[in-house]
Structures are given as C-alpha cells and as structure tokens.
Length: 131
Figure 1: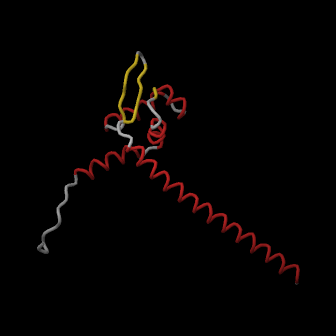
Figure 2: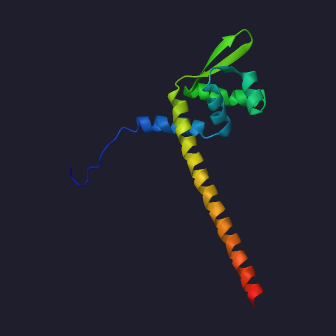
C-alpha cells in the first residue's frame, strides 16, 4: 500500500450502529426494552411499570419502532409492543452487567477508603491518649 493511500472501510454498519446506540441512549427506552424482553406488553402496562405518562412513553416507543427495535400489534383498542430481535436485549444486558461490575468495584473501593479513614482516626486518638 502506498503511503498516500488510506484504508477504506464501509461505514454503513457503523452508521447503523450509531443510530441504534443514539436511540438507546435514554433510560426510558432502556427500561422499556428490559421489560419487553419477557414478552409483549401494551402501553398501559409499560406506563404503570415505568411510571411516566402514556404520551411520553408513546413517543419513545414510536422512535424505537421507526428505528426497527420494536414492533407493534393492535388488538382492539390496545397496542402491544415487542422487541423485534432479542439480540438487542442481549447487548443491553451485557452492557448492564459491565456497569454492575464497575459499581461493585467502586463500592468496594469506597468501603476500603472508609475503613482506612476510620483506622487512621483510631490511630490518631490512641496517639493523643498516650501523650
């Protein structure tokens, strides 16, 4: 390869991934997906579980439907939502597991620092008593 040539890669898949990632970068949408991994739910069930207004949730669900993350099924006056591809939940679960591991490490470090601080204060008190 010549020095002036740059490797060319097709950015299509990365652009698609970025679009999905941007769509998922919202706690309401992540919570909705987490709930839907157990099966389809109607909007009323989701609003009760998540605790936001139906109009707000519907906007989030519509965006995820446009991107192709969830699909709808109408039954009477109810609209049911489901995840199109369960691999999206697997990806979200993997990220959540990583975050849980990080939180455990942070909490362990905080406990260690607190214990070290308490130990230092005890030593200081003992030194003051000896004087």
